[in-house]
Image 1 (cartoon, rainbow over the protein chains, first blue to last red):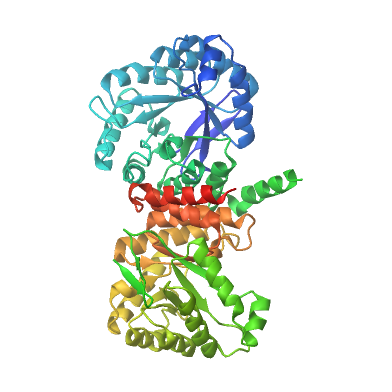
Image 2 (image 1 turned 120 degrees about the horizontal axis):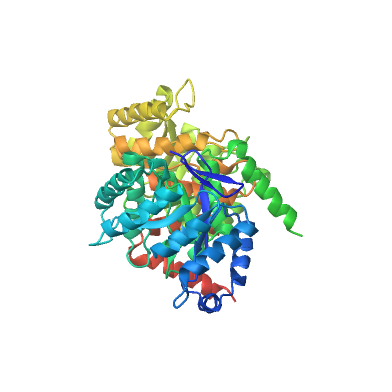
Length: 285
Length: 285
């Protein structure tokens, strides 16, 4: 299954036989007070820095979220999408919980975007999926419904079945469905990540769909976060995770992903691995 | 399935519901010219250093191999086993391709050792398994036979079936069988590690046996070896690897294993993870 994302000039393919798709998480004001304040003033200078740092780190697509309190999210989304597309040819992931912001972002975007995200709640599906269809986008779908974020992998799998049915009902091909198997903080309960891993395994076996998740959630609240993420991503990739929204500025995390690509035979002749080593060696004085 | 190893005073359990068993690889003269020369002179001072470095790094058992050219391996094995047991209470893995050295090491060892190793060759099985049985040891078994080291995971699984039958024939319980799924260098062929991972998955599904492997093989000949190993071990653990003979002196590798233990819910309340963080922080000036 290949999910194809496009900017005006570049195509990125997400798939089980492809290098893992690193989606940069950074253009997001959640938990960033100064950035929120800047956005309220209409100042997007921080977005330019976030773009260049993530591109330098190895991002293959960029998530764009403009959800700052007391700011006009739809208007900021349009400006951020236009700014990002003027600075990089990476495809974008239009990220909002507000349907109007998703719509504004998709209208401003040139190419085929990834929409982040829709849950298995009927009201959300009915609001978001027509947009996805109309703009020919792909969409991240989360297996939680009105009642709960289920813990049990089998229950999540059932909800994935509902998401798949909804996508089909709205004429969205399964290649444009990217499932988020719901990554939870290991610090909250040490059994939660094992359930995410089992969900990844089940979704791959049953549906063969592409999957992405917010990788930073896993280590939230724990010490040595990058070491946890650097183990988690290769583990999840082994079971079928094909993308993550992650800290693309972290050399450790990106290297862990590239090592897993190599080990899963997604780096022919190890060419990328050896080239990255040479680039690092050349950069060291 | 629990494989229990013992020294005179300490017990280590290998199992799918246990913390991953880190077996230190270092007491082995292969590729170490100075150490080989020392062993030929009967000088075991290097072994003492290897023991203390591996214990400090986090080894939970120690492999002991005395296979230096032109040296009396059986005699050195007896001395090394006695030396190791006087310096550490970690269980030992008696490692030799020479049956007499295995026998000498097992006779000198106090506790329940792990024997490294036997292949699926009839002559080897008939020579090694009676020893294992007589000394009440556990044994690492490799799915390669007289003809080949098979690449195909299904063929390896067939040979595991033969190994299991041989163990049963010699009265060795399956809890004392540890399968080596054969880790090959990714640099030789980028499809080889994926085959090892698939073998791990198949052996777990079909037999539920404990498994160990020589983790350093995977990155042999490649740059940034520890980064490759740090991705490989969590990946293999996710599929069912329960132990590795590895560089226990590498903080990166040990931390990757501990992160995977945490994520697979083998570190209740994250207590080990947090304690290790505090120890590192306290050690930094």
